[in-house]
Length: 287
Ligand SMILES: NC(=O)c1ccc[n+]([C@@H]2O[C@H](COP(=O)([O-])OP(=O)(O)OC[C@H]3O[C@@H](n4cnc5c(N)ncnc54)[C@H](OP(=O)(O)O)[C@@H]3O)[C@@H](O)[C@H]2O)c1
Image 1 (cartoon, rainbow, N blue to C red):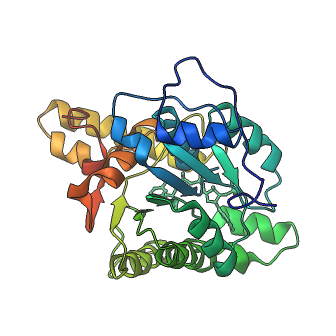
Image 2 (cartoon, rainbow, N blue to C red; image 1 turned 180 degrees about the vertical axis):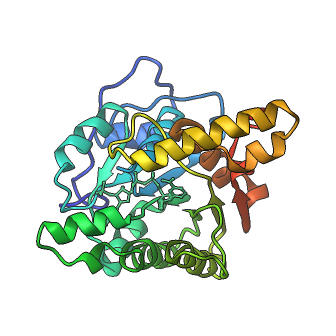
Image 3 (cartoon, protein in one colour; image 1 turned 135 degrees about the horizontal axis):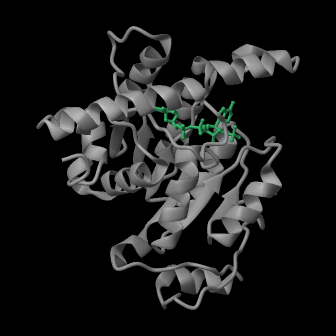
């Protein structure tokens, strides 16, 4: 049993700040508890499905959505070695866990049962992941940009297209993505963006700058050093009046980035548009 339509939803503790609203009623009837409500009452009407929810960005998007009273479903791949860890952690946050296999029919059924209003595609691999898979005796191509960043994201999109609810599809791409990009990573991102924007769904393609933080699971030492140096230089530039440069290039922490993704994914003004790094920041950050 992997989740939607079955008995796989996990529950967390009921918090005292929970207030009455339609999702709470439905969830209470099924024995599901733990939702907090923020000031934006319309958020409680949303139902969010997050692929890549275990990632540095995804986990924070899940946490923030649930804390705002959104019914939030975090997808964790069924073969995850940390399935129990994520199930426990998400339950504590009022986030439901689904572990549908990455197969189009199965994912289609899950989304058709859930009827999400928001689908977040936040997954992606790295060359380090592919190398680690190979070292462990696996097939590195299964962890390639093509197999994960492209194929799984498109699979999710197709499932969302077929689910009947026309959810907003928010795709976490990258700064620099474009057909003429130099790296294979960015070229794949551009192809996914193109497929997303050709969809019959409302969509938002989001292009953050470097996503960095001391609390990442993976060290990414090079990225951390790069982000620190770039941010320091941009801080100087910002102090000299180059705030626009800083807003475009400075690294994101996952808390601010998650807030920006959620804002853009819910805002009708960002429907059918590309949100660049500067658009994903709070208006006053880096100004
Ligand atoms: N890091 C950056 O500086 C940066 C900058 C711009 C854009 N981006 C893009 O933004 C997205 C999120 O970045 P992030 O740093 O938050 O990512 P992250 O922490 O590396 O998380 C990646 C997510 O993708 C999932 N994933 C990876 N390989 C998978 C596979 N073979 N099958 C199923 N799921 C798989 C992971 O699941 P498991 O936990 O189960 O492995 C995890 O949930 C990525 O697409 C990334 O390319 C990143």
